Length: 242
Image (cartoon, rainbow, N blue to C red; front, side):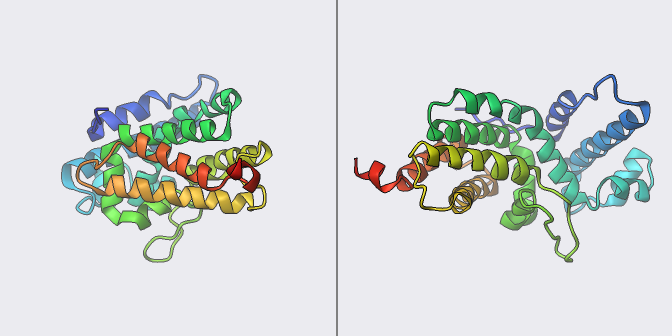
């Protein structure tokens, strides 16, 4: 599969297309959402043009012609802008998950479809994901999937983590619990423990992929292979011996 590495402008275009506010939202809220989106778009353009480390918040606000207090009302730091861009990229794809779960014939099938959606988003936005990985490696990527993550100064980087809230908590939990009910996964192992094990495996794969200058492997295939290995290794005793 050909891996498409998008420019910052293309990433911004995808974000813009998938986040048009509904017509019924009030004028004030539409303006707020529009400015938030503009901050993300302009920040990504500056990061791509000048480098993340060389781009200051003052550069972003000068480009937008807004004040620094206005910027900080929307984002606590420029790192939080990267988190927002990655989260926004997941919004539309994750809407397919409930239908995916309903149509899956097994927990393994649901899990493979779920990680496929995730891997496709990461692959499609490879430039953004590499920017995240190269800025702070595993620790920075982890801050985007764990709630209430702390920055290097010990301050809260953001208040929630969409990857964590939408992937690890409800969806992976649903898949693990479904698998235990169907006898595909060992019910003697706490669902929380199984979920954490699988998430750690997938996280390591994504970090390795995003940290390389060029993708070292097909991310979708690697994640789905990991799901197969996880499910086979966590079968209940009766199922495993059958």
